[in-house]
Length: 278
Image 1: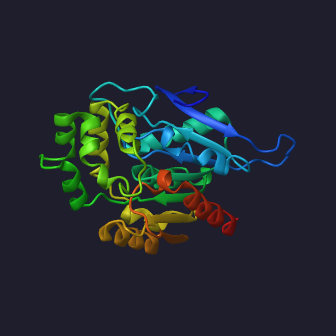
Image 2: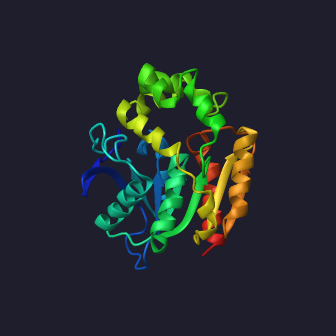
């Protein structure tokens, strides 16, 4: 649970967000803002450790995506597109009077940063992609299906929490995870209803941003754990080669879940990249 829950009406949604600002009150310059966007079925709590690491020098905006966490839940059958999700974030920025952000996204949250940079290039100062794919590969889709017809069918069979428990080793480095973290992740992801999780899977399993990567003007940092699957490291290297202004960093000794398992190391890379691209 966040210390101070905040909500904003944006279009048809009530978005749950947290805007932290611990910069010096007497500053007259415009404070830069980082938007921390959650991965698949995750929420603002996964970014908790980033707030003190960034908040002394920058404003830090976290939000729960459409249907995730404590943001309002559209009913089953509601439309869902990547443009809608990107527009939700930009709409929240408008509501809060934020002109531009450094977008940091994990997994599908990174993909949405790419969409936002394409749809709203003047609003995105930089992008950081953590364990992000421009296209969900067949092997990934098969892995998360855990023996069912597809991931959606697996979630409908087991529910979000149990499906998460059965796939935990694919979303975080279980060898580095402290006791209790895995169950916490399952509980937090279960805040996303089954119908939202299935709809999001169906959406992201069909998205391919690869052809449009060269159009993205924002400087882009890609961070991946050195112990991640070779296909993911290879894919992110290929993405880096297609982006105009990009840098790829491998975090040594880590698998998945680097944003909440190694926040200090990842934030240091983000800070360095943003400074290099001012």
